[in-house]
Amino acid sequence: MRTTQILLPVTLVVGALLFAAGFPTAPTIVAAVDIEKIYRSLDQLKAVESQNLALRNELEKRLATMTETVKSMQEDLDSFQVGTPAHNDAQNKVILKAGDLNALQSYAKLKMESEQANSIRETYISIRTACALLAKEQKIDFVFIDDTVPGITPTNLEGTMKQISGRRMLYSSPALDITDALIEKMNSDFRAANPGLVTPTSTPASGGSTSTTPPVPAGKI
Image (cartoon, helix red, strand yellow):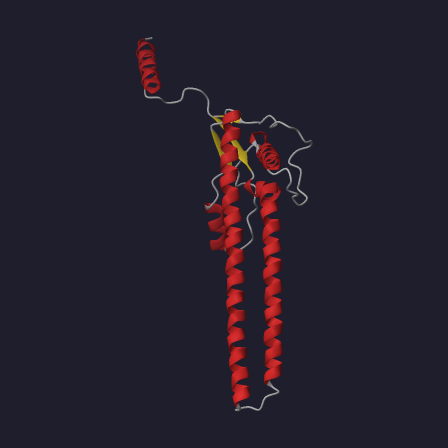
């Protein structure tokens, strides 16, 4: 009885101190998302990828045209006698045009890598922003990336250990998943902001189309 009498005031004091210090007293609500599925399903990213495809086709067309030009100039070079001023002049032109071709190839490679990196980065920022809004609407405190979804790729011991050590979650209940809700919200917002934009065929985020964000399952800790 004496021990109980001592512990009770201590518990009340500790609780009062935690409350005064601003520590949360309500259960923490958590949720998880499949980030790879989100990237695959967003109209925003599909629209950007469509633009990137058009850019890639344009660059490939320019490369093909310049390649044919260099090939034709090399064939014409054979018609000149080696060592003559005409041959030397034609040879210099081939060298310059070949240099232009190499420069265009390097530019095309760097340009496409840069555009793809920008689209991935900007989409990630959009995901974070939309996720924050959805979490606030649904009173969710934390949203984790569910890294239990991707499998472990067969490789050597070092590669396997790196994949395992890079994981942060061992299990995530499907009931906590808000992936489809986030996809639906982002796609709806994107379509509303871009009414005239036709995006490639998208994967439905949920069973039906709704004008409001579907209820979000979440867990308490």
